[in-house]
Length: 111
Length: 117
Image (cartoon, rainbow over all chains, first blue to last red):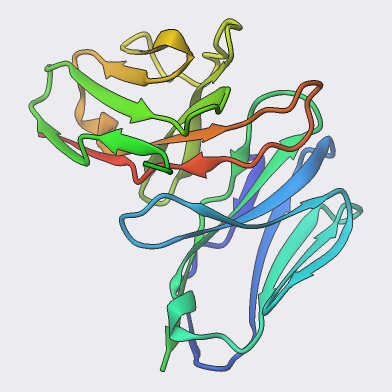
């Protein structure tokens, strides 16, 4: 079983829709939870990170972490065509060097 | 430049040849990571450098893979006797790792797309 599981999609939504992206994980030691956005032929860029459980909001983006269920989500409100990209979740323990990434979900927002 | 740079951007090689991939991290960043991204596989950790400490090589898939970081800055990932399954995008990231641990944001380069024929 992979440490981090993420549905690869692809996901296609109309402009203005609310998008929900999710990851599950198996290692209860993970404390840092990240969401990255990756455009085609570019490196990933950090969108948001959360420490431990709870919600975090930044503009149209909201990240949620439920450690009891080992489940994290990213919500995108009022989705725009420019949000079309691959979204990767990532996690890290409090100590140690490694970041563990999901496979990424490909999102297309149709104008 | 202000960001992480990688070269070459694309590399096509024949099976059995050696390749070298280069990463220039952000100036002042103490930590450097190499990842491999294959279709449908996500980012696979390969190796991690932190300052002058011994690198964490636990992600290297075989002894054909090696990496070095000279002077705490530029890093080179070398793949010897390339195989077709080595075809992937190789990404480098750097970060400033605070003393005592804690969160460190990774900044990624654009990657090197390696194709082994």
